[in-house]
Each structure stands twice: as C-alpha cells, then as structure tokens.
Amino acid sequence: MKTRSNSGGKQQLTRREQQVRETKDALCAATIRCLDKYGYANTSTSRITQEAGVSRGALTHHFPTKEDLIVETTNKILRPAANLPKKPVPNTDLSPEQCELTVMKAELRRVWEQVANTAEARAFLEILIAYRTDIKLKQRIKPDLVRWNARLQDSVLQNYILIDGDDARLARVWKIARVFYRGLITHEAFVEDPKALNEIMEEFINMLAPMMRRR
Image 1 (cartoon, rainbow, N blue to C red):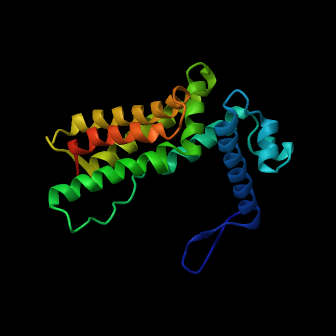
Image 2 (cartoon, rainbow, N blue to C red):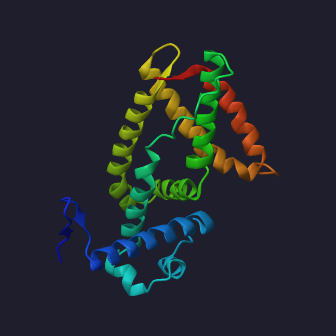
C-alpha cells in the first residue's frame, strides 16, 4: 500500500502505515521502560509485549528477534540525542563574561537532566553493557554508534569552542564529558542519597564550564 500526497506535495501515511508506525513506536517505548527498570538480561520479549499492550504476534511480525527490536530502539534513542539543548536567554544583568559562564553551566546541567539522566539514556547504557559481550548485537549496532558519534561531534564543534580555540581538544573534552555523564549514572550504587549525584554534577560543571564558550 502506497503513501498518498496532499495538495502541498507532502507524503501522507495510509491508515495501515500509521498503525505500523504506532505499533513499532509503542514496542520501542516499552523496550526503553523495561531496560531502564529491569536491565538488559531481564528485558524479555514477553515482558515488552505486556508493557506495550500488544500481542506476541505483533511483536514478531515487526521484530522477528529481540536483537531486531534492540537495534531499532537504539536508533530511536540516538536520533534526538545528537541534538544539543537550546540556548537559554542570557541574563542582561551580568557582564558578558559572567553571562557566558552562566549559559554554559545551564547547558551542561541541562544535558545531564534532559539527555544523560533519563530513561532513554539509562536504557542505552544497558544496551552498551550488553554490547561488550553480545557479538551479534555489536555487529548490528556498531556502524550506527560510529555514525551517531560523528554527528554529535559535528554538532558540538558547530555550537561550542574552547577558550584556547583548539577544536581537536574540544572533541576530546566533550568525549570526557560523555564518559562522565554515563559513569555518574552507575555511581548511584555507591551513594546513600541519589541527590549526591547532583552535587557531583555541579562540581563537574564548575570545572568544565569555564573552559568552553558558545560559537
């Protein structure tokens, strides 16, 4: 069944195509919730179908294997993650230097709150842990991870600059930041109060923000 075109030339999905998209989206969303709540090993296809509210047959029709579903879910997680947060409105009461520092701190904080410390990011971390030992999964998602990494690096270079102007160093610094963000999620196991993670994040922001500026 083909898509239809409206008067403006844009493609419109048929009812069947829309149903397929909605089912796939529901399964991927359920996979994210299950990975976040139960971890990779305990995220079974039966648990996913129950979470999504769809039949086993619907799942296997769209995703014959759990691996197929994980690959699709990985790509759904990665697509928006390469987009950097919008810049906040500067506070005109501050000096230009203070304003820039405040903006950078706000952006780094928002990356933690809206990108790194989310159900999607925690689910992605579970996938990365499985990636280490699951050879088939590694072969399937490695190219996607490499492409996403390149897009993210391009986005960073387009939006930020180090105070010394060294773009190669900026790329390395941002990689360090990503490693830190992911590591901080696992560090929750070592603290009594999860709020301690925010205190650690603030210290990291205070170290990194003075090194960076917006382009």
